[in-house]
Structure formats: structure tokens, C-alpha cells
Image (cartoon, rainbow, N blue to C red):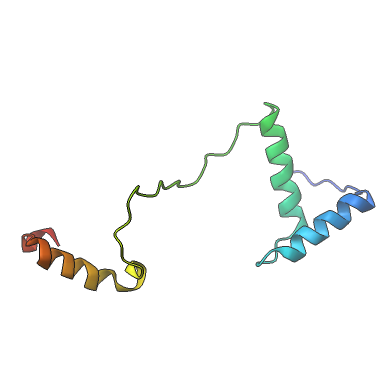
Length: 90
């Protein structure tokens, strides 16, 4: 890995500091700069883009439950009972 020292114009440095300040989790400036440079070089064909993370497509119709993440076992048991699913499918 190589190390570079760069001097940023005030406008860019101020924008970078404002971006870092607005994040919920503190991100080091070098990580932001590395990510931006990687994106820049990928868009211009000098670097292969990173594989994208998991992308989930929402179901067209929801279950109607608002608390599934907290009560998943209870909801699954209720649905299994209502639909008379065989017990080995739980």
C-alpha cells in the first residue's frame, strides 16, 4: 500500500469536514477520500468496481404485521396454526 500526502483547497477541506461531522458514526477523512477516489477511478474505467453488497427487493405486498422483526416467532407460530402447516415445516 502506498501513502500519499495531499493538500486540499479550503472549499474541499471544509466540505469534507462538514460531511464527516454530519455522519452518525465518525469516519476518518482518509476513508472518505479513498472511497471517493475509488468511485472516481471506477467510473472512468481505471479500476474495477467493487462488488455491490446484498441488495434486497421488497415484496410487492407486505404481511400486514408492523412488528415482525421483534415478534417473528410468535407471528410464525400464529400463521402456521392458521394455515395448518405440518409441524416439520416450522
